[in-house]
Image (cartoon, rainbow, N blue to C red; front, top):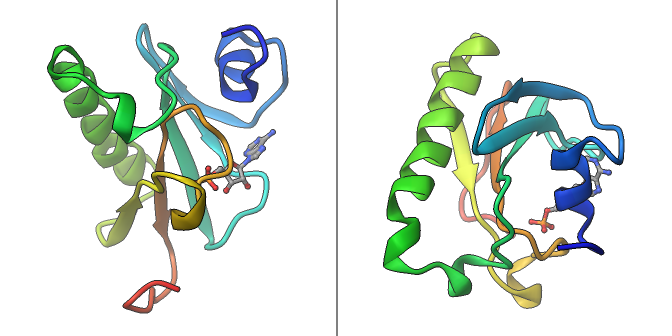
Length: 112
Ligand code: AMP
């Protein structure tokens, strides 16, 4: 999608601190980290939010989760949180689906 920030990061048109790049996904550091490790895992395919996922995307979502596991291992984390914010009131600010991978400190529950 031409005016999507994360599509541009995936395409290399906007710089980001990337830690993994694969055929179908990219992992990069959040610019406003909320924990010592705060990574964003995004598909290259533009999907606006979890509400826009179809069953055809099931394998891709599995790949995103697997990338979280591998990125956590890359960061030497065995304890971490994976978050998806869906919709503005849930905290979504970028409408290109992404998983947050947070770790490196104690994380409270429930989230705010
Ligand atoms: P969300 O609020 O769940 O949509 O998450 C979007 C995340 O993208 C936020 O945590 C932002 O800090 C992060 N973010 C926004 N712009 C950039 C950027 N240019 N590079 C890296 N992370 C970004």
